[in-house]
Amino acid sequence: MGTFIGHVYPGLFLISYGLCQAIVVSKAMIFKDSLLDPSCHPRNKTRWAWLWKISYGGLLKMLAGSILIAYEISCIKGGLILMNRELPPRFMYPKEWQHLTMFILFTLNGCVDVMSKNLLPQRCVVLEKGTLVLTFYVLLLLLMSHGQDSTGIELQIHYLLIVVVFLLMLVLTIELWTPDTFHLLLIETFLFLTMGSWLIQGGFILYRPVTGYPWQDDDISDIMFITTFFCWHVMINALCLLGIYGISSFWHHCYCPSLKLMESKEAPHHKGTTGPLYKLLREVEQSEKDDQAPLLSKSSP
Image (cartoon, rainbow, N blue to C red):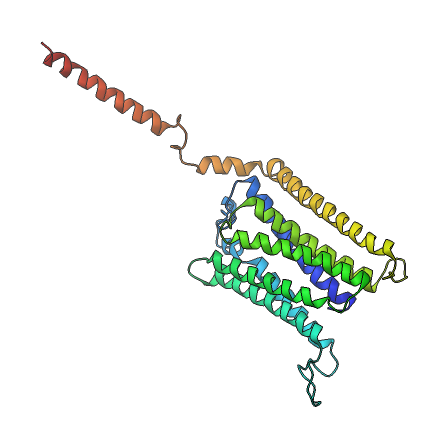
């Protein structure tokens, strides 16, 4: 991960995951649907309906995590060894082992998502959320020690990344008790996008600066602009979420009008107070009152 590719690939994965989740959350908000058990479109209730139930987010985590694990191992010439053969023995490649731990955790989290959603008889949301929370607790611990030998620009980039991971950890912890809350899921999606875009930005700042000249660790202007760029990422990702929701809302309301008609046809008639079942009950009650009226009049002196 201590290379340009090592920052860009995880960033692209996080952005892809965040965009997919933003689309799912936007659709659920538009149709007032549950995020834990989303309803299937009436036209998709065929033999291919199982495709809509696949945990694509989990598969994406497994695929990206496996690729990053293979990349991290291949970057070390001679293999990724834990300790050397000198006396006394010393640990080797501490940062690479931290990267490998992160990628293994994300891969295992993807396996848990797929197992919970597609293999278990009943989906276990607590297991999915708990594994994700544990992953980010470990990630936060690794990041806090990851930048101890960093200075200047690199240290500032790591500090801002730690802020995002800490906030994401808090949101995911709260979701253990309220997993179907739109506001928390929106914040989670926003933080995933911010984390991914900032990793990519960090790769460009550290290894491929746009100007062709490296950033200066002793220049206070460069360090201040790191924070400014981070704030720009926050604003851009917020606008991206707003744009995805707006496009999804426009698409579903203008280009999918048949969905409302199909839902209204399938909806039971007894939901409203003006349905035929409600009218029938009123007529039965009225007839019972009419039948009881003559009996009362006869019994009275």
